[in-house]
Image (tube, rainbow, N blue to C red; front, side):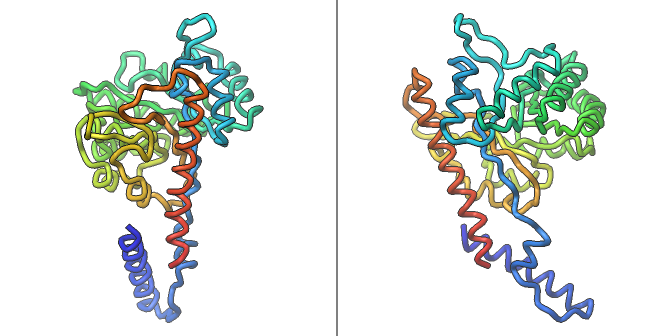
Length: 318
């Protein structure tokens, strides 16, 4: 991995140095100068509330904060004290409710960086529903709304039409609508990039979900991610195993090499959330207590911190 990274970096430096020489500039471009051209990505390692969905939202936020995350992504539903499953934020909630929930997060030391749309892009009420989520996110100071589509597909034209309407709305609000891989029109990063490029609006980008790419269509995400690198604005972090069982799991528990996965986006100059969607161990029952989830959340954070530090430190040595 290090050899591959060093080789890529040296080729880049050699090409730029040759360009400078052609222009009559004889100085050699150093590694530090190259990094000024392409700055390190500011990865925001976040935990979704989704792994805590069996417990109240309040306990989810407390557990994520206690696990030393600085960033949080809102999931979809949680079990309330009454035993009823309730949405993190109702689709029709006033934007002020989103702002209040964001303030609760910040009071715990958590910056919210992403929220689910909870509606598919090709749904009949998609445009109006997404506009509500965009307004909620903008009012709460949340930079990304995570969306997805049906696993069945077959409505490509609807995707393009809806996203071309939503892109300018999101951009004007200071929000990016990010699309995760979910089968159908978006089974892979390559397929998702085709959609994003056809829409052609900075308000629409990709949330890369390597676990879904491997799970839904058994495509190698390490190869696939290079087909969509320029469009990636965030990640839904989950791992996957094909052996001994076909199962999603937490980062570092599966077969995906996160050093190889994140290397293509290690130096984009962007701020990029890495939101842990699945933190669980394969083959084992999921924790029945929130304290058990806390342990896995902490492990996921520590693992990703090591990967990110290692990747960027390796490049610094050049």
